[in-house]
Image (cartoon, rainbow, N blue to C red):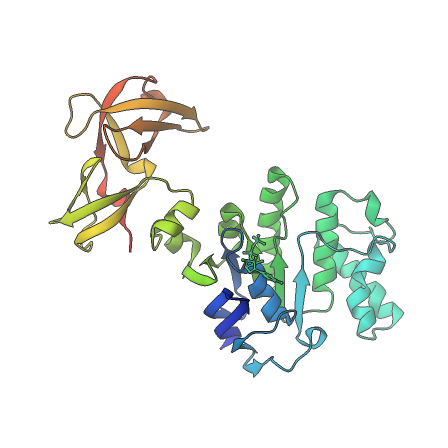
Length: 341
Ligand SMILES: Nc1ncnc2c1ncn2[C@@H]1O[C@H](COP(=O)(O)OP(=O)(O)OP(=O)(O)O)[C@@H](O)[C@H]1O
């Protein structure tokens, strides 16, 4: 059974639906990341589950129980926000012991729990430190320890690593995944950073205008974005209008093979940059001008301008990088082509 279930949840602010009939289930021990551009309804989703925002219609169920009459502090959900919201006047121990103290744990029990949690988040012995003396990453760990302290059935994270620098985020996200796996925590997290979501989640949910545009494992969504919106949101810009018949798509980029069994007719096509092979001018199809070459570590991202239509990006090995300004033709690999819905 799903630990958390949203059943046709709608939240309106005036005429606008911040959540529009959302159905979502989160299984016990699952880590689900909700992803989407600003204003797509991610925070509203968390707020509705936490009880900070009532739903206009629909139901939120935790372990099968309708939460509509249950106040925030009795829902058994933990919330951790982007800005940590630590109590600045209390030390680390005072922050982490907040939940157990509110639940009436005695001092010895509080001390034991705080020590255990600080150990868990990689800050052993930090009980007496002042919040102001901590780095951003350390504050994030304290906030996590505080959110975990009351042993919530569901932990919700709102842009948990939002303010930290990229290197630290990349390290922490791996640590978080490992930690949640070890504890068996059920997590519903919100982020606008797809890298973070894909590294953390068992399942990602992409939102658009209050609706779920696509849900699936990171691999499924990455391999087969459902539509142009999801493809572009994931950073795939090689999208082109196509007419598909007999396993080949006719486009302004030339004729592109599509995977066997693809639907036919007028469709949008996503071509992953890795599926674009540059050949010297003289191959089939349109001649492209090499507009730019950007070094990306283990490959070069090459932007190609066709005679008409959108730019085409190719990912080429360092040794095959063309000169900017050169004229080339291209060949496409069908297994890097996705017919969008
Ligand atoms: N209290 C409110 N009153 C009026 N409109 C609101 C309120 N809260 C949210 N909205 C609107 O609802 C929509 C969804 O907002 P929400 O904060 O859930 O989006 P989000 O995806 O979390 O965005 P961000 O990534 O910028 O935090 C937006 O159009 C927002 O302006």
